[in-house]
Amino acid sequence: MVSFTQISAQQVAVLKYGGGGDWYANPTALPNLIEFCNKNIKTSIKENPETVEVNSVAIYNYPIIFMTGHGNVSFSDDDIENLKNYLISGGFLHVSDNYGLDNYIRRELKKVFPKLDFKEIPYNHPVYHQTFNFENGCPKVHEHNNKLPQGFGLFYEGRLVVFYDYESDLSDGWEDEEVHNDPYEIREKALKMGANIVEYAFKN
Image (tube, rainbow, N blue to C red; front, side, top):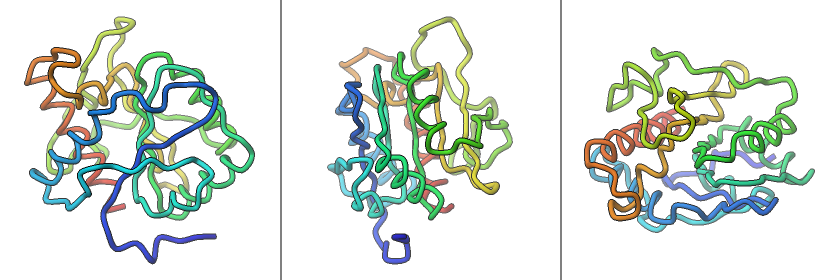
């Protein structure tokens, strides 16, 4: 199994997955989050994020990987084995439901961790209290089904390995302002929450 002992740089990547879903959605989101993190939490992430496939050994170059989209997700047996090994050896996955991803990502991550269920992350969890404090959990960026935003997690041996923002749409909030015309206050909250996730992943 590859380990993270060789990793010295703080880098992030977009996860490319199969199934036909638009893994490439929100192209301006991660570059904007990286810029915000480098400026506000003193990271040194390369400004142009890489893309990594689920079954690639290159996934181990990144302490955190980001995943979003609107549609189907399908993990092969190789994907499942590689992603599980990545996560249990120190990796971290942030999934941002871009509306329409929920059923698929729950199904596929159940294949990765058959014995684990998503649990709502309590508001006192450290991921909400890094450089920025979120006393009420995930901020709301976009309205979809008139539901409250939630942060769900998969915990492996007590460690948070997957953070899943649902009915929040954080990655939309990271995009260039003209993409969704979100007010600055909303985008700033989304970026701050994203920075917390990055900071938490780098520390844990």
